[in-house]
Length: 102
Image (cartoon, rainbow, N blue to C red):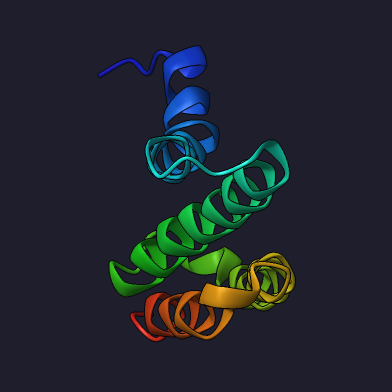
């Protein structure tokens, strides 16, 4: 099986960000809020991918680095969420729940 790298890159980097950003647009969010939620979605999407890889024992040689990156991305996601005052606590809980899947 061959991998179409540009598509794989899009899925990893664009899909999680786009999904939450479209929700923000639909809700009528301003540009700043859309940017914050998009950054949150990107970080959370990558955390999800890393936790899935760990749960499936994919790339076992990179497990330590993967856990480190999850921690960094969770900090990023929480920082973005903290700027979204009304929903910060819920978004932080969601990030913690995703990280707990590993």
